[in-house]
Length: 122
Image 1 (spheres, rainbow, N blue to C red):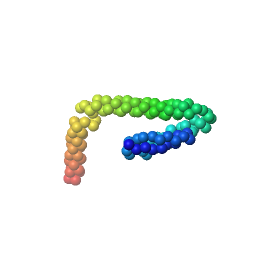
Image 2: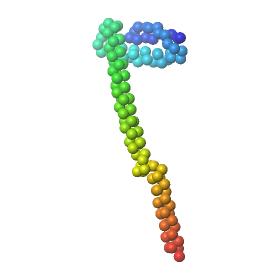
Image 3: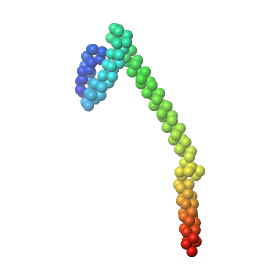
Protein backbone atom coordinates (compact mmCIF):
# COMPACT_ATOMS: atom_id res chain seq x y z
CA UNK A 1 0.00 0.00 0.00
CA UNK A 2 1.24 3.46 -0.93
CA UNK A 3 0.60 6.82 0.65
CA UNK A 4 0.32 10.24 -0.95
CA UNK A 5 -0.17 13.68 0.46
CA UNK A 6 -2.72 15.87 -1.29
CA UNK A 7 -3.69 19.48 -0.72
CA UNK A 8 -7.35 20.43 -0.78
CA UNK A 9 -8.50 23.96 -0.01
CA UNK A 10 -5.19 24.83 1.62
CA UNK A 11 -5.09 21.80 3.86
CA UNK A 12 -2.90 18.71 3.48
CA UNK A 13 -4.27 15.19 3.75
CA UNK A 14 -2.24 11.98 3.85
CA UNK A 15 -4.10 9.20 2.04
CA UNK A 16 -3.43 5.54 1.44
CA UNK A 17 -3.90 3.97 -1.97
CA UNK A 18 -3.00 0.88 -3.96
CA UNK A 19 0.35 0.55 -5.69
CA UNK A 20 0.31 2.38 -9.01
CA UNK A 21 -2.75 4.48 -8.09
CA UNK A 22 -0.80 7.41 -6.67
CA UNK A 23 -0.93 9.64 -9.75
CA UNK A 24 -4.64 9.02 -10.24
CA UNK A 25 -5.38 9.89 -6.62
CA UNK A 26 -3.34 13.10 -6.91
CA UNK A 27 -5.25 14.00 -10.10
CA UNK A 28 -8.58 13.45 -8.35
CA UNK A 29 -7.48 15.52 -5.37
CA UNK A 30 -6.39 18.30 -7.73
CA UNK A 31 -9.86 18.31 -9.27
CA UNK A 32 -11.49 18.46 -5.82
CA UNK A 33 -9.09 21.22 -4.78
CA UNK A 34 -10.04 23.28 -7.83
CA UNK A 35 -13.74 22.92 -7.01
CA UNK A 36 -13.17 23.76 -3.34
CA UNK A 37 -11.12 26.84 -4.20
CA UNK A 38 -13.78 28.01 -6.68
CA UNK A 39 -16.46 27.67 -3.99
CA UNK A 40 -14.24 29.50 -1.50
CA UNK A 41 -13.78 32.38 -3.99
CA UNK A 42 -17.51 32.47 -4.71
CA UNK A 43 -18.87 32.23 -1.16
CA UNK A 44 -15.97 33.31 1.02
CA UNK A 45 -15.08 31.71 4.31
CA UNK A 46 -17.09 28.74 5.42
CA UNK A 47 -16.43 25.80 7.66
CA UNK A 48 -14.24 23.02 6.33
CA UNK A 49 -17.13 20.58 6.61
CA UNK A 50 -19.50 22.81 4.64
CA UNK A 51 -16.84 23.50 1.99
CA UNK A 52 -16.14 19.80 1.50
CA UNK A 53 -19.88 19.02 1.48
CA UNK A 54 -20.54 21.59 -1.24
CA UNK A 55 -17.54 20.35 -3.20
CA UNK A 56 -18.81 16.79 -2.94
CA UNK A 57 -22.22 17.94 -4.19
CA UNK A 58 -20.60 19.64 -7.19
CA UNK A 59 -18.73 16.45 -8.04
CA UNK A 60 -21.88 14.37 -7.51
CA UNK A 61 -23.77 16.71 -9.85
CA UNK A 62 -21.15 16.22 -12.59
CA UNK A 63 -21.24 12.47 -12.00
CA UNK A 64 -25.04 12.46 -12.25
CA UNK A 65 -24.87 14.38 -15.55
CA UNK A 66 -22.25 11.95 -16.90
CA UNK A 67 -24.34 8.95 -15.87
CA UNK A 68 -27.39 10.46 -17.60
CA UNK A 69 -25.36 10.98 -20.77
CA UNK A 70 -24.06 7.41 -20.61
CA UNK A 71 -27.60 6.08 -20.13
CA UNK A 72 -28.86 8.11 -23.10
CA UNK A 73 -25.96 6.86 -25.24
CA UNK A 74 -26.69 3.27 -24.20
CA UNK A 75 -30.34 3.73 -25.16
CA UNK A 76 -29.35 5.11 -28.59
CA UNK A 77 -26.93 2.20 -29.07
CA UNK A 78 -29.59 -0.35 -28.09
CA UNK A 79 -32.07 1.25 -30.49
CA UNK A 80 -29.49 1.20 -33.30
CA UNK A 81 -28.64 -2.44 -32.58
CA UNK A 82 -32.32 -3.41 -32.66
CA UNK A 83 -32.74 -1.56 -35.94
CA UNK A 84 -29.70 -3.31 -37.39
CA UNK A 85 -31.08 -6.66 -36.25
CA UNK A 86 -34.44 -5.93 -37.88
CA UNK A 87 -32.70 -5.00 -41.11
CA UNK A 88 -30.69 -8.22 -40.99
CA UNK A 89 -33.41 -10.18 -42.82
CA UNK A 90 -33.74 -11.01 -46.49
CA UNK A 91 -35.04 -7.54 -47.34
CA UNK A 92 -31.91 -5.94 -45.96
CA UNK A 93 -30.04 -4.08 -48.67
CA UNK A 94 -26.81 -5.24 -47.03
CA UNK A 95 -27.71 -8.91 -46.61
CA UNK A 96 -25.80 -11.72 -48.31
CA UNK A 97 -28.90 -12.51 -50.35
CA UNK A 98 -29.16 -8.92 -51.57
CA UNK A 99 -25.47 -8.87 -52.43
CA UNK A 100 -25.81 -12.09 -54.46
CA UNK A 101 -28.84 -10.69 -56.30
CA UNK A 102 -27.04 -7.45 -57.14
CA UNK A 103 -23.94 -9.32 -58.27
CA UNK A 104 -26.07 -11.44 -60.61
CA UNK A 105 -27.76 -8.33 -62.04
CA UNK A 106 -24.43 -6.52 -62.53
CA UNK A 107 -22.97 -9.56 -64.29
CA UNK A 108 -26.05 -9.72 -66.57
CA UNK A 109 -25.62 -6.03 -67.42
CA UNK A 110 -21.93 -6.58 -68.17
CA UNK A 111 -22.88 -9.39 -70.57
CA UNK A 112 -25.42 -7.13 -72.28
CA UNK A 113 -22.85 -4.33 -72.68
CA UNK A 114 -20.31 -6.79 -74.08
CA UNK A 115 -22.95 -8.12 -76.52
CA UNK A 116 -23.74 -4.57 -77.63
CA UNK A 117 -20.06 -3.78 -78.07
CA UNK A 118 -19.61 -6.89 -80.24
CA UNK A 119 -22.70 -6.05 -82.28
CA UNK A 120 -21.49 -2.47 -82.80
CA UNK A 121 -18.07 -3.70 -83.90
CA UNK A 122 -19.54 -5.85 -86.71
